[in-house]
Length: 133
Image 1 (cartoon, rainbow, N blue to C red):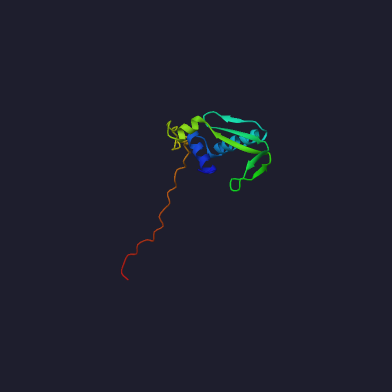
Image 2 (image 1 turned 90 degrees about the horizontal axis):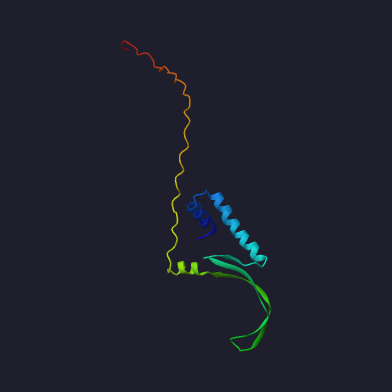
């Protein structure tokens, strides 16, 4: 599922137009990214935890040669799936029901337009000729 598909699915499920759903989805992503960039942990209960982790410098071992090498300190992004998400993904718990059909909006009331009486047009027919030719 791509971002466009997600927006469409949210619009249908929440019964809103695509423009509103796009603003909500993009706004949610922007808020998560901004808070994680500041170093805060964003925890969406039952779904995932987003964090920025600082890893210290360390000594590691090259598995091919066994040689020790120094690994520099670095900052990494970490996303952890939480229990609720794992249970649904692995089939332990049932997935939530989604609305897959957009509800029909009630038709707007039609205004009764004042109709002008239709003018009868005289059929322009040639008079039939009498007699032989």
